[in-house]
Image 1 (cartoon, rainbow, N blue to C red):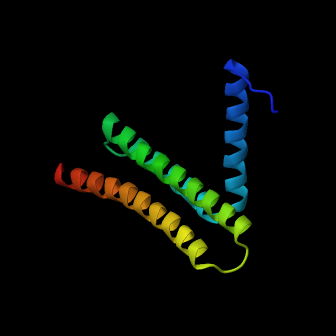
Image 2: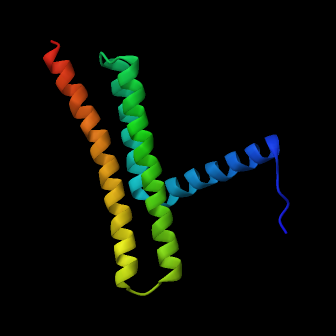
Image 3: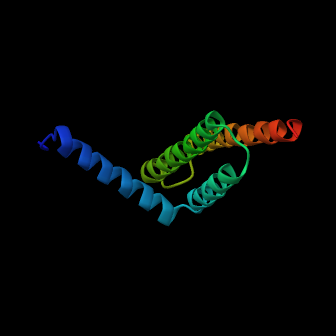
Amino acid sequence: MKETRRGLAHLSAAAKNSFAGLLCAFRREAAFRQEIFLGVLHFILLAVLPVSWLERILLTAAWLLWLAVELLNSAVEEVVDLVSPGWNEFAKRAKDYASAAVFCAICIFAGGWIALAARIVVSR
């Protein structure tokens, strides 16, 4: 049986595994790299635009949500490819559902930026 870590050892192992997952996604997933690039652009724009702290927090939360959903989508794709290497209607649906979740997260992020742009334009 695998030894159970507790306290700081558990936290350290969890952080190491999380970083490994982020690095793997960055190396293997073009969509994840694009989302990271958009995140950099996002932070640059937040630094130069007249944006409240609440808007910064909400938009950054929307971006992080998008990244999290993309990572879950990638995990679903990996597992589906492992258990169903050939074409299968159920596997296709599972991948389509995960992709639709990413689309929803993109809509949240884009909607936040559209609302921010409208607020900036109206306030001028």
